[in-house]
Length: 154
Image 1 (cartoon, rainbow, N blue to C red):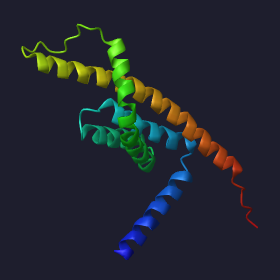
Image 2 (image 1 turned 90 degrees about the horizontal axis):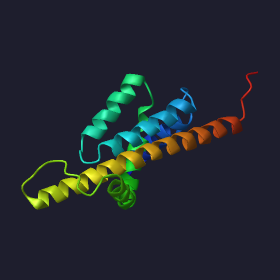
Image 3 (image 1 turned 60 degrees about the horizontal axis):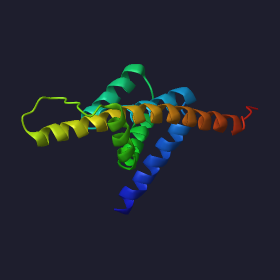
Image 4 (image 1 turned 135 degrees about the horizontal axis):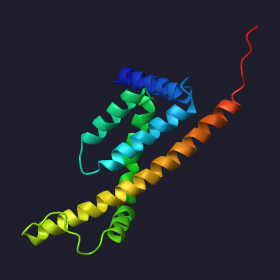
């Protein structure tokens, strides 16, 4: 068990170092993080589609998969605290008599209405969160690159 934990710590440390020193540059790392965030927020009701969507986009544009996974799991953590805000935004934007499907059961209409409100709010909050995360992470990486002294080859 100790050997497994040591290997896991080493793997995490190497991936973290790889992420911070990605030769692709701050833009690609920050954009990968933003893709992970937005893919999770766009597909809240579905479990596996967000992960597949993220992998396809990141592989297609050759971005950093590590950064996208960090963004994906970061969004998993912050989704629950943001859910009331997402619901409030969805309620504000959808009018009261919005009926996504004409179900004959009242409880089904209510559930679908709440899901539509939550999804609309999640899309808006996810877009804003992805843009904010992109600029913050890019700036952190740019400042880190500027602060790191260049080694001279002698």
